[in-house]
Length: 171
View 1: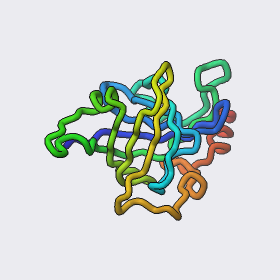
View 2: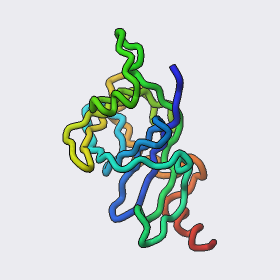
View 3: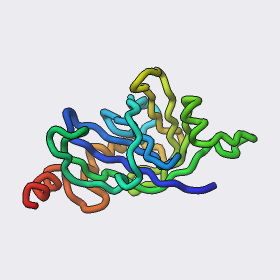
């Protein structure tokens, strides 16, 4: 099974949220996750699908200027590779594109902060479909861990959102 890249960007725009992006189909398929991903299988986190982003956005960290789409400060909160858990499982050769269309993605993340299985389940269609992101109950699950609050810094630069914003102001 081939591994593709993912990124979770912490994004302080009109409201603070996390952008969860999966590389497939020649783009970064993207969701805005208000509370970020959890390591607790009991948590069901809302994820709003947004437009796909270009692949070169995968390592973007900086400030998007006022007046532009997504204006605000962005840092790379987590990054790594993932694999499709539905590919080849029980004769199911569902590709990521088909899984997205079916409304059920099951992936294994190999990130710097997050690891393990996650399911994304579409719960509502429309222009901005709503999904749930749920941590699978596996060896990487940890109900006590709260990485969005205990690990706020960029995995690329070790900076906080305030430091990313200050660096952009200095340029």
